[in-house]
Every structure is written in structure tokens, then in C-alpha cells.
Image (tube, rainbow, N blue to C red):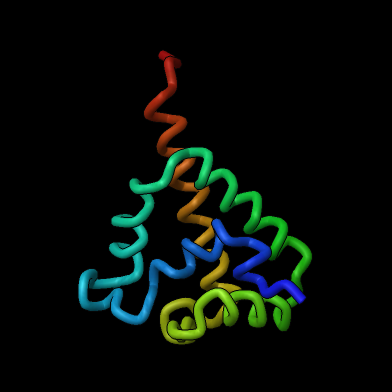
Length: 110
């Protein structure tokens, strides 16, 4: 049986931003994610977002907990995000936000 981090490896990388030592380098979760996002190409961000939708669009709360818990068992999302679903939504929002910011920066609209 394929584990979630094997099935959706690009998405897993964004949950691993909050690895065991992330607090040594960043004051909060948002700073850690903001430092990580610029390292990824648009293609990688788009792939991670596609994988997010594959993983979570039809997942119930138990499935979300299982997937996210497999992605990163070292981080407890309860206090900051209210649980695994909140953390998953936070990752999606950052992926979408970064892609939107890049599209806007590349826009030729007047």
C-alpha cells in the first residue's frame, strides 16, 4: 500500500516545512513557509496544488488526519490550526497565494 507521502511527494514537501527544528530558524509557521516558497518553481507549486486537491477535496476529517499525520508526524497542528484540516487548508492557501502573486508579478495588464 502506498503511503500518502509517497503518493503525493510534492505536497509532502510543503508539510515538511514545519520539520522538527523549524522553530530554531523561524519565529512562526508563516515565516517558515514564506522563506520556503521562493525556492520552488511555478511547475512544482502547481504540481503540489494539484496533489493537494487529489488528496483533500473529497477527504473526510478522518482521512485528512490520516494523510496529514503521515506527511508530518512531528508537528502538532492543534494549537495553531485547530487540527489537521486547518493545517491542510493553510498549506493550500499558501500554495495558491504564491502562485497568484507570481502570476500578478508576471502580468502585462495595464
